[in-house]
Image (cartoon, rainbow, N blue to C red):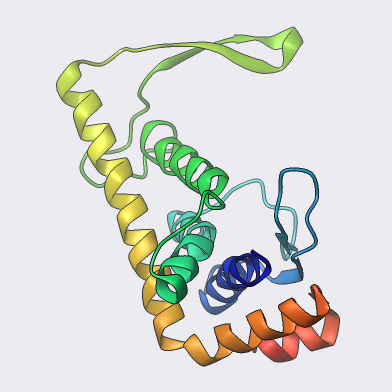
Length: 186
């Protein structure tokens, strides 16, 4: 389990580091916390209120880097990437339905959100589009996820020795940060 978690977190960190729009990796740990087996902490260069499509795509690849590493090294994946997949799918869906970042569907939003302002969260989404458009949205989200996974897989295959070294160090030390982490990632 420790080794799988080490490769999983190493996959996130390495993919995030090697993509041009990835946030810098600050710390990797395989010390379990509650339901989480380990974590990779990123430090954004600055507070970002806006993101580009390229930044989102790199974020998706980084999120799927853990799953890609598990598959590459062990031939199958665990339940570990479940939350990563959920987060990536949510980001991809927002790219398509809220931010107009779909080439196919163009610059428009899909679904009116009813908000309860005093609770600060969305309560319902009313669909203002038909079944055909819903299928196109699903297809666009699917494409973004597949493309991100392929990117992660390509990077980890190319930099497999570095992934192995990060995982080895994590298994023995459990946490990597600072200069040591930077040396491994650069």
